[in-house]
Image (tube, rainbow, N blue to C red; front, side, top):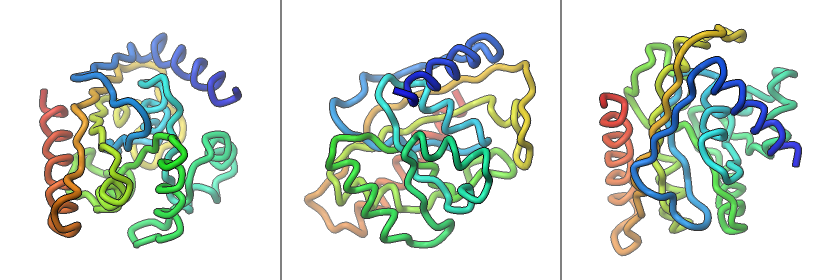
Length: 199
């Protein structure tokens, strides 16, 4: 209930101050899915959560739990702490369990906020989770958050425009080798996000 109330308030603020706009290329898949987005700002999880009606449980760097004001919101979201830039089997197991329960999860596979705003690399954790769970990845492209709350800043500007694009779901092919499919998924997701960012 608290999650829904805060999401409603956040969405209202986004629409009033930032002309928040969501574009969806195709209907979201029924049931649990994995939202995978580019990462430009601390605002990004809020923007993704406000773009869909279903709750989204995020995988968040364990370092964020050290910041008191962020820790509170991460607990409300029931976010899954995960070690940054390294395999975290416990975090992956939790994500798989949440998906099995029917929850959707959200990830930012760049390993942190991009200092340049560009998508230059993607770690493969999200793709591994997709393969192991059999759930589709929904690519998401976020524009505008970097200008409103840049990397390293904690207080947003009160003017700007935020646009979010939701791409077509990408389903893992469970009939081929996991290593090959993870690479294939990573390339597809990255290309989808880059294409949407350029549009």
